[in-house]
Length: 42
Image 1 (tube, rainbow, N blue to C red):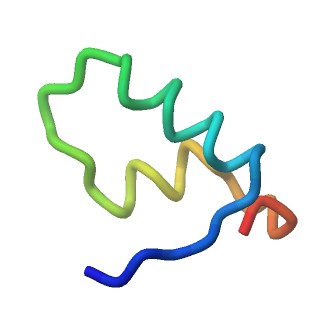
Image 2 (image 1 turned 60 degrees about the vertical axis):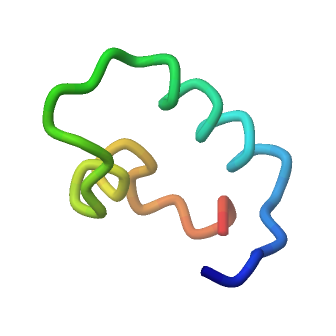
């Protein structure tokens, strides 16, 4: 997987998400739902 440059906001969100006990895995749908449709995070 290629390394991507991500914004500090998104990095924080990922760190926060990683701490969440997660039984379904990191599915793209869940991540998208978590992030919402906030385009400026990308």
